[in-house]
Amino acid sequence: MDFVLRCRASSRGRGLDVMFPIWEHHSVRIIKQSTLAKFAAANPKAKPAIVRWVKLVRAAGWASMNEIQTTVPGAVVLNGERARFEIAGCNFRLIVAFAFKHQIALIKFIGTHAAYDKIDAMTVAMC
Image (cartoon, one colour):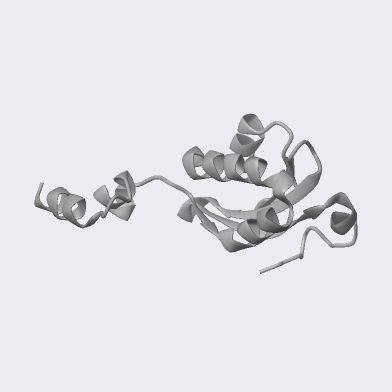
């Protein structure tokens, strides 16, 4: 109880995230979320869809690519760790590598279909 009280006192309005130790919090970490933020700033049409995708992924807690496909039927599994998502009505493509054991999603690419056609989805790393 002392831990929760200390966290509440130090939370400074940041919500429930600080009330629970990381090992009890099942939220997925999105690495290089700044890549998404920069893309949304440059492409305002994509911003609402990116925000929805981030909320979905943080809450999902996926353990496999099969779970991703069940939750997001339009997702395309590229290999055991990478998946491609269609963003903003299929106007943009997002490639993400997942480390399911550690609940990490690493942004590898976000761009237009034309930009996607110029990259190798299996090796690209925008970061």
